[in-house]
Image (cartoon, rainbow, N blue to C red; front, side):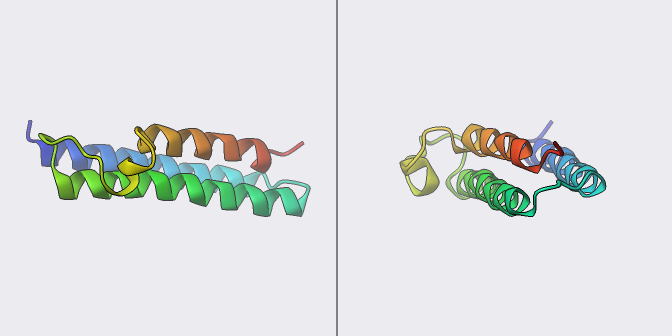
Length: 95
C-alpha cells in the first residue's frame, strides 16, 4: 500500500475520532464554564502540535531525519499533542 493511501486512511480515522470527540463533549457539557474554556484552549494546543507535526513530516519526507520546525522543539510532537488532547478531557469532563 502506498504511503499517501495510508496517510489518507489515518487522517480520515483521526478526523472521524475528533468529530466524534467534539459531539460527545457537547452532549455532556461541563458544569464549570471556566474549566471548559481552559479545556478547549488546552485541546487546541494539543491539536496544533499534532497538525504541525504531520505537516512538517509531509514537507520534509520520511527518509530524512527531521530536526526543523516543531521537531526542533519536541522530539515526538504527535505523541505530545495526543497526550495534551487527552489531558484536556479532564478539564472538559462533567463532575
